Length: 344
Image 1 (cartoon, rainbow, N blue to C red):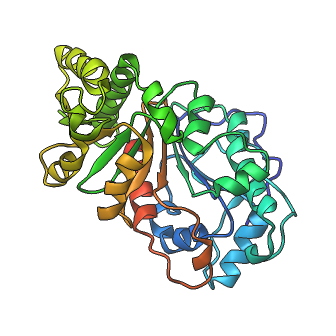
Image 2 (tube, rainbow, N blue to C red; image 1 turned 60 degrees about the vertical axis):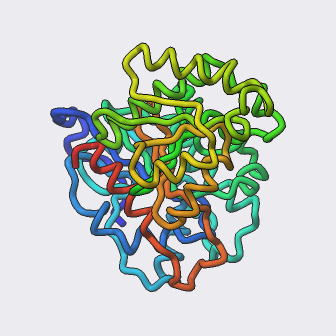
């Protein structure tokens, strides 16, 4: 890893690229499979690109894990700030220089959370390029909370960072699911469902499918909140009173959307290819079916935001650390979507 230093041409601005592009990879929880997956996939992300690629995390942890995993070294250029990553190249932004120089197995829960938290929070000082893709490695939500991370998850962090509500989209190769509500208690969900919320989420889902996943005329189905879509009010009236009018509003605007449809059938229908995405009303309604069929090969997309944030759809998997058993499929898809978004 090269050390950062004063350039001989420091008084001259770097030549401006045709379009400012950047790929960022945050390393997440160090006690997991992220470094293992990235080492396996280095030909995907570590080869020369049209703009800077910046890995963000603890460099001490990266070196230790590379050695413990018997991986080959990657030639990063060390930087101390985002401003140093202006030209195409491979950079490492160390968020804790000299610290955490021990095996990830020996890190405390709070230390693990602190490393993940600092990597994410470093993005607050990034002057965003015209086109930015951020691939976030998984975090341990409890560890991050112990370190003072105030967000329920990474999705909520990026929504605040980029000042937009966004939408959580979980995408496999055949089934894609988006969420109307994210990390909320199930008891709170009915009170959060409004006509405006559904319209907003549908708009962001439609645009994300077009821009990020390159689906020109996406077919969207909206899952009902209640069993049998309420069965004409027998099991609740939210579906007909709130969700149906929202769907009709978006249809009148030209969106290819139907619903609300009973959630016990539409996921299979989408899996068969009848729909490009399902808008689920709450977290487990959508993620249960999605992970049943795409446990190893789904990605988590924060859609409807000014830039792309994408992540493997799994946790850190600390129980697999050092065992060479991790499946890198979800990481590969995340990187491929990010590179496609940047035109790389």
